[in-house]
Image 1: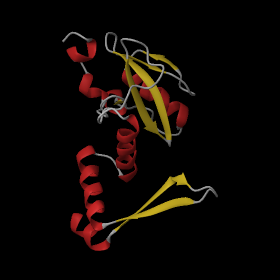
Image 2: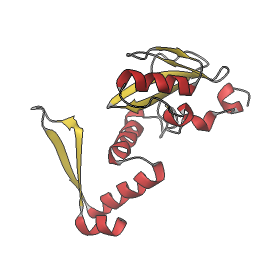
Image 3: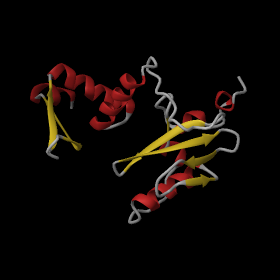
Image 4: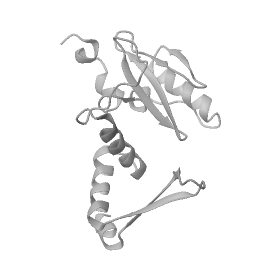
Length: 161
């Protein structure tokens, strides 16, 4: 696949990005940059839009690569989010109870588990799909960009270092 990208160049089209007239924004990458995007896609297990999003969060955060917790995250909680159906759903994870509280939107509320919160998001944003998801892989830690699974049972997440 990398050879194909290098031969053909790389044209990215993101339907979520629009210009001032509401049209789709397109941009072209050099072969070298396209190869880097492809490597990041594989390393981070995301699509092109995920690569761009993660890089933008890195530069917007001004925190040396660490993305700051979402505003409004309570002390002792861990800021997490999910991207689903074009929406960014902000939440906070309680390391003690392993509960997730969705901070706003149609699925707003406290859920006993990350999977319960993930199910609520799917039911709220796309009721036509089977709502069962592994919440530990659905939610992303704001400060690291890692899946919530990275904090499962972690003493560091509970502040017991």
